[in-house]
Image (tube, rainbow over all chains, first blue to last red; front, side):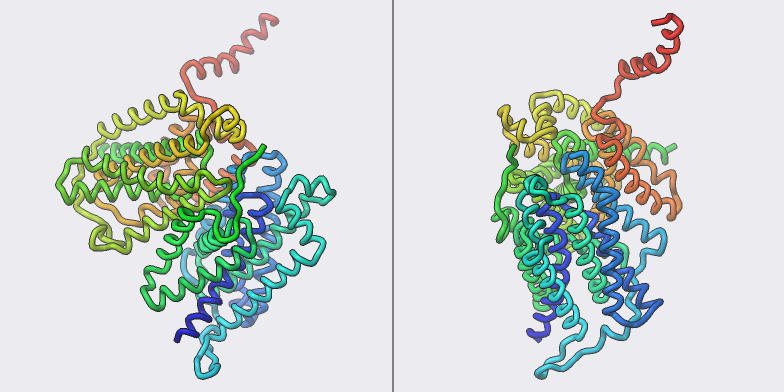
Length: 290
Length: 295
């Protein structure tokens, strides 16, 4: 029983981690909360749903499809909405507001064009349990955990080992100086949005598989924000640790205490962290300098 | 006729909350995702005080305001000192917590089924008077030292600090005033509707309120008032389901466009005044007349 819950918790945590890493990447570069992130998650969930419905009953292919669409969407959002604002070098709050506007458009457009209902994925896949050392574990949880972990490792490798990754790390520490070093920062920002979108699309596909697809599914990104704050805003390892912690403890609370207290726990955790140690596990307190 | 008076009354009640958010976002440069939560605190505390102690409204409403201010300041103290989006995410959390708390303590709040039998003592003249008082109060606040300090913080935090403004305290004052106005609006709402339920105060509601402020113009009091006069009763004119949904799509698109092309909103940071209107018409139409004189 406990092991089963742990696996479920880890798989939920890994999905949170996918969202939180994308969010933290953007935050570390541009210092703003990208509310449009939730649109990518939602689109990911719906693309997978329609892929399974219309094309083929293959969850991995569907996830791949979601990933690509959401990644491209994220890059387009950056080009259309954020780039003009970044060019004008406006106050950070404008970026937040633009993101909020995109989130509202996305969510309501789905309601208008499709409907507001819940759509369960048309796949036989989700109910198969497998026996492992005498305990039955949902195959779906193992696949989510496996694929998400793989994606997270790939992102980590990209950031640590490649030239682009070096540029991202540089930009995270100081965007303007990195630009002076000859790094094409604008392209870098687009790449980071693309990357965040890819992860969000994957996360959307998996949350859709677990919870069905519905218009406000993107609001799960608030859990990613909480994970990121818990781990320290802008810190990517912190976001991953926070996400896994949140996923596991939410599942445990739902299993052993009460499922109605699950969300309550996350938000109370958020407020407690903000009151006691607002910089989170790995964040550093920064003040605005001239 | 009573229907339209009802619409105007509700508009007035929400306008008080929107004024509060305008003080926070428009004049201090802070962004909150959960102000519906503060309205909820105000309304539930007020309703519960009025119901349990059979107290009149003028005791319940200050209690609700105090509750909203207390929670707002408690969350503001640790987060407003930090650079970054800690405050935004904290308000998002508070908004959700309040809603979840109301849903999960049905013994006290009536849970998801709602709180009923609140004495309906809010009347149209009362809302009108309070609305005017609030506008006057905000106007005085904005032209006071603290209001001007807040605008300085909005424009440039570092520069504001350099001239000796206590930025964190200034933000906290903005937060307290905005929470207080939201609490007031909540209390009036509770006593107007006669019932409350948690889904009145969702994140979507917070978003709608903040969008109204932004469309009206960050930093324009008259812009905010105009925007709330137009946008709050708008759903009453669009009674069909489809129109309601398109309304939110349109709001979103409008906000993105406004932010990209006219970031300061409809009115910018200018105020509408009788003098201003005269000047506007003079510039518009006066030019033609003067053109003949050969200036």
